[in-house]
Amino acid sequence: MAALDPGEEHARFASWAEENGIEVNGVAPARFVDRGMGIVAAQDLKKGDQLVNVRNTSLITVASPSVRAHKLPQNSSIHGRLAAFLALEYSNQTSEHRIWQDVWPTQEEFQTILPYCWPKKVQTLLPDTAKVLLSTQQSKLEKDWQQLSPSLPSLSKSLFTYAWLIVNTRTFYWEYPDLPNAHPRLPKKRNMLKPEDCYAMCPFMDYFNHTTHGCNPSATAKGYSVTADRDYSAGEEIYVRYGSHSNDFLLVEYGFVLPVNSADSLPLDDIILPLLSAQQCNVLREDGFYGNYTLTATAPYVCYRTQSVARLLLLPLRRYAAFVAGSDDGVKEQGVVDAYVVKLLKEYSRQVMETLGDVEGLVVSQSEERRMKVRRELRATEDTEGTEELVMYHQKDTLLLRWKQIRDIINSAIRGLEG
Ligand SMILES: C[S@@+](CC[C@H](N)C(=O)[O-])C[C@H]1O[C@@H](n2cnc3c(N)ncnc32)[C@H](O)[C@@H]1O
Image 1: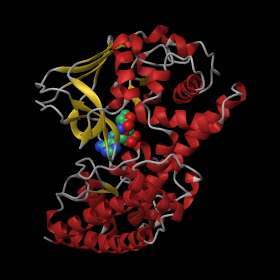
Image 2: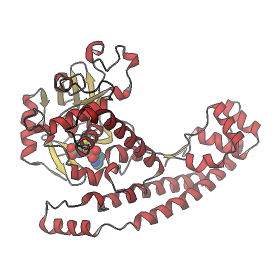
Image 3: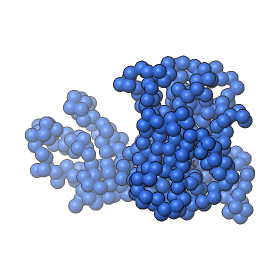
Image 4: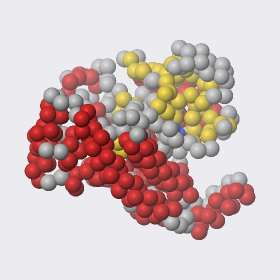
């Protein structure tokens, strides 16, 4: 359920947006219990109605004059430059972007939501895929800080980190219509442009939450817009699609998991790779089938790569070779291959149940419990003392939800493969 009147700062920002090249038609920001702000239909809407349009001069990219004015170090990444810019603006009470920044999630909210900010003991209970993504995120942020901090002595690391995470959770893909003249840091040719160059902050559009079947934001040289993908009744939340992302990705990059996610899958590499001999690894590398084995909750449950590696582990080499060459469809051996995969999945399921026990045993910090109690009683409290070290209900609940999803995907595959 959404609160249609989310507060004065959001009303102020909505007026600012309309005065600054952002058209908003029939939608409004609203506050939700479990996902911060979002967008709702303020009236009945028809499929095809344009809901939000942000003209290109209102986007914030490294090519924007206000970002260029800061003359940030040339070698720094696009992500780092945008983060430095936002952090510098954040400290500047007279910045034209203050009104937008007032509607962002707070640093305290990030402590609760984003795995980057979680205590170490909670991070160690993330699924392996999420841990790898988190470690990449940590290295990228650290590298950006190392590159930028020497020339920005007034900037604190905590403010830079907050702004970096704001960029991470709120940017849109943007290909710079006038690329050759956009910025010296960017390539002149479009085919040299890398995804990590294509960041645009898009005020107001960044209110939309994600789901797998939401509206598709679209970019043209004139800017960014969102059009209704279907009819909406007044009060309904309108989502956009951030992309096709697994729940481990959504958790680390955005701080949430979807209860139902058709793009979700589990990697099986940690289960399968340790079973391979050095010789088998070489065979798979040569054939392009080494790693990237995935499991899904629906048929066919395992990908073609997993079918192949299971055959290499289980059958004579020539049977595997015929399967990957496509000269044998593998139907004859499918029963034994499925039974072998089920055996691996049962072992995986046992490990998952152990981790679920560890997550269930996670003790929510007393002061967090007290804080929640005060919150429940008084509805709100400003007491944020020491929150960074505390295990919070939300962190534990999110981890439990993710591990239960993992358990359910494995069990569903076991049932399906056992027929
Ligand atoms: C682009 S912002 C969307 C607006 C944001 N909810 C806010 O309060 O400003 C992305 C963030 O919204 C939240 N979010 C987006 N989609 C969500 C969903 N389906 N469920 C829960 N949280 C979601 C996550 O915290 C994510 O990092």
